[in-house]
Each structure stands twice: as C-alpha cells, then as structure tokens.
Length: 192
Length: 185
Image (cartoon, rainbow over the protein chains, first blue to last red):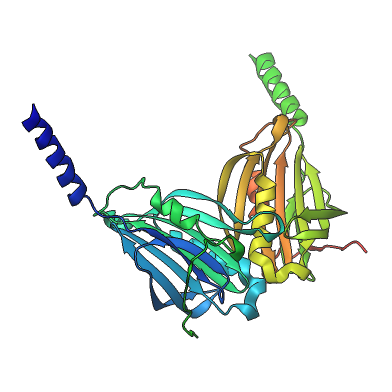
C-alpha cells in the first residue's frame, strides 16, 4: 500500500515536471501609440511591412512572443494621421486581407471601452491553410493607428479551443488608466 | 374541351392581373454626395437624425421608396466632424443596426475600392427582414437598407440584394438616365 502511494506521488511529480511550463502573463503599454495589452512570455519588438490598396505600402511595428506553442503578435501600423478619414476603409481592407481564402470560424464585432470612449473593430477566428494552426485576431483603427492582435495556436500545441487567444485579444485597452499597474513600457521604433 | 381551355386562359389572365405590379427600377445619382444606386418606385426625400455615443448627433438625409411592400432606404449621415474617427463611427453604426436583432448575415461589403459591411437581420415582433450595407465615404456614413414587410412576406426575395448591391461610388458607373437626387435644404 505504501509502495503504491509512493509510486502515484512520483508519477504525479513527473507529470508536473514534464508538462509545458506556461509563462506568466504580463502587461505591456505603449503610451506613445495609445494602447496596452497582456501577453505571456518575452515580448520582442520587430519591424515588418504591410501593403494594401487603401493603406499603401507601410512599415509596421510588431510586438511578438511565443509561449506553449502559441504565437502572440500585436502589429501596429502607425502614421495614418493624414488619412484618418479613410480609417474605416483601411481597417476593412486589413480585415479582408487577413481573412483571404481561409476558413472563417468566427467574425464578429469588437468593442473596447464603454460609452463615448468606445473603439469599434472586428474579431475573427480563422483556420490556417495546410493545418498550420488556428488564429484569433482583433482589428482596431484609432487615433491614426491600425492595431491588430493575433494569437495563433500552432499544431505543436494542438489545443485549438484554448482560452489563451481570447484572453490575449480581449486584453487590449485604449483607456490607459485601465492598464494593469506595473506594465512594461514598449519601445516604438521609428517607421516610415 | 374549348370551354375548358378558355377557362384556364381566363384564370391565368386574372392571376396575372391580381399580382402586385412591381415598379420599374430606376437609377439615382448624387454628384455632391458621391454615390449612385438603383431603386424601384417613387423616391422621396426626408430628413432624419442619427444619434450614437461615439458618433454623436448628426442630421441625416433619407431617400425612401416603397414598392410591393418592400421599403428601400438610402441613408446618408453627415459625420464630417467625426471623420477622423471613421472606423469607429462606421463600426458603431453597424453595431447599432444589428443590436438586439437576430442576425442572419454579417459579411464584408466591397464596392469600388471601399470596404464596408453587409448585414441581414430579422426585425423584432415579426416586423419583417432588413438587409443593409454600410460604407464610410467622404466623411459620411452611407447606408442602403431594404426591408421586406410582413405584407410582402417573401423574405428570400432577391430585390433586397439587388438594391444594396446597386450602390456605386464611381458616379460614371451610374445608369445613363439616372436621376440627380435633390438634397433637402
């Protein structure tokens, strides 16, 4: 009996040790770009590119982390200040481009902040081609910035109904007083 | 046999006479607003008011026709003052349109390089079904809405789609004999 209990305890300890260690979620803020979000793992900053008919060619700022085979990505296309009246069109084009020929599982309204502070956008979930995983994304255009949050559950994770993508895309805040205390300030590199 | 044939012909003619006469479709254009569309029946112009938390309160112009118990409306809301918040102002208008209603369709709309949204909702209390399209053009929300009323009852009619898909923002694509819309003072 005692041997069985020892065996069970050892097995449980082994299971805990071999399970993927999920990183703690942390809050990030960009006062310059006017938003904050939460993500697990170490967030790194990159510069990318985007091209759309309405948006034109643009450099993007990408904040990215990977944890437990889920990729978390915030892409900001700043400097639409001269074209804010085209914001609805630029946002619609970005959503349409994201969807492309993928299988759409969800496509619904996104709304962040209450009342007069509301920012309306879109939330979508798509399956990536060739069993490449599943991406849940949110799109917003506010104050001249096009902001996209994408969480992709990779096949190596395989838990396509994980709540973590939802937690990520719903963590965005535009009223910065809502940001968790102790948030890390994100650097915004200069882009064209 | 001849009497039987005559009776069939007479009843066919009677049925044709009793069918509601659908009015011809006609093109309409507003050069000042920058769009054109097609609708059946006689188009009338009304003034309205639009209220939203973010978008604010604004005057609207409604071009409205009713034919065969389908109501066709082209609504133009002047949100020029909020144009810098275009994406949210348009999203809010779409949200208000579907709020509390049963949504049957919610998909992309894309016309002449403008991205928008097309939605179909069932109205509360079995008041009919509305298909609508929303775009933001030149500082204005432009929405086309076709409502099949219960008196018509054919909720799958293609007329709703024909109406909302008739919009164009390239006025050169308007019908050659399109009528210029008169804006209320």
